[in-house]
Length: 436
Ligand code: CTP
Image (cartoon, rainbow, N blue to C red; front, side):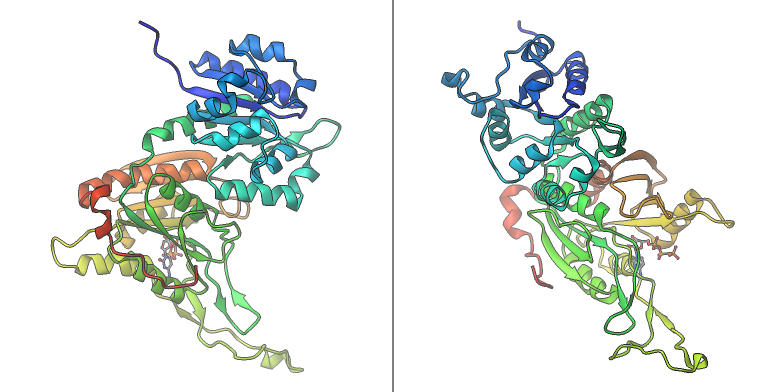
């Protein structure tokens, strides 16, 4: 009997000085039972020789599609891989991957792969921050490719900054998470979910607004994860700083009241609503039709009077409670951005909010000047209405998103009828409440 095969990984290596670290990553993956084939680019071979990859992986190595052409390696490798990881991914490799070029074996593999793809960029800070590179990264992410944020620190020369390849154990952990999430693929098939993301803006006059620092990254990650797991997703998007993922229905909104209308319309018949948006609790009581001007007399400076916005999540909870017994039950998830203060810790505020809001799950995160908002990472505690508590230590917002859906899925099974693919035509259409 042949021994059980480990997950098949294609390790792409692009031509950057960090290519030498890929040897450690390769070692780490093979030693933990992965069957790794290395596909370097021609430029990578200038940094690390082919013999190193062959000896460490136990597989022959090629950089072009002509070697072993009879076996059509670019199709075989892509189709049979459980994961493709590229480390380091250079600016050039990111550009070629984003634009579908296929001029060597690695870019061909990226086009034929149907498995998860993880790219670990490494380059100089100026290159990483260049809009061309950032646009390519956004495009790749919008297609479901996981692009790790580079680490900050010493670069090739004397310079330091963001652009370092994350350490091999970190990349290996991200590989394991993606391979693990393969088992979760399809567990939201037939479900319809609504995610609100971003931050609402409450106009004071035609040019000014009261807003908040939410970038929408966590909500976008939740929408992308749900779509990857098979759900039909409506993303109610308030001023996102990041592109919405491909394959989700986007309803753009501006104010809290617009968000409330869009969420309520989309929530009808939905299996879950995740309120990740930062919704303004208050809006200016009056909105000037023309730009507010300074007068000569400081005594006549305007005073902004605020009035309350509706609590969207509380409204959904109340609507669900008022529904007749036996109605379709929607799982409701809230977020709580807390700072902790003299009246309680972050956790105490979270527990109180869960009880006050009456939702099924509360995703609690600590926010501050440098925590939570706009960052690619997040650290949360998932508080369940059943008293459960799961801590997700600082990690990417993609991993947090999967942890949230991991917690939601059993609640769906327990509370809503599973809609099998054969009956998905009975799922009500997503209301078109906004421009696509
Ligand atoms: N939320 C909402 N409607 C509002 C305010 C918040 O639906 N008007 C939702 C958010 O999307 C989030 C949850 O309620 O899922 C908690 O938001 P948060 O701002 O942390 O709490 P608040 O209810 O606003 O309470 P406070 O700011 O007083 O802590």
